[in-house]
Amino acid sequence: MSSGSRLVYSTELGRVCPGCAQPVAQCACKAAPPRPVGDGVVRVSRETAGRKGKGVTVIRGLPLDDAALTALAKQLKALCGSGGTVKDGVVEIQGDHLDKLLAWLKARPEGWPVKRAGG
Image (cartoon, rainbow, N blue to C red; front, side):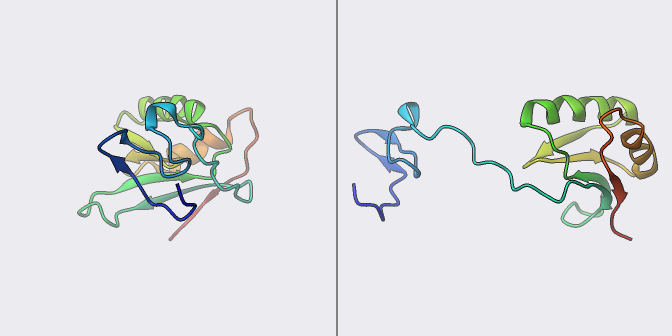
């Protein structure tokens, strides 16, 4: 294949990885691309944009891998008594739980620097 190929499906092979041009089942580059490293500060904010007016508390900058981030999100959801998710290294907790999450994250033994972000 040429290096400029953008093939994503082949009738012969099925779905094709755009990174290595191999069938997805035999992909040589299965490792997810690393998340960009931030400045080491965990930022907690409240957002409503793109959510039809529903507010969520967003936590960015946690220096954890995907499995640990999912486990932490589960603890945070239980603490707040609400739902949430992890998307692209960002934890989203439904509702306005900014103060509760700030206090909980600051009390953690990891000693992450935690800041309130936004207005």
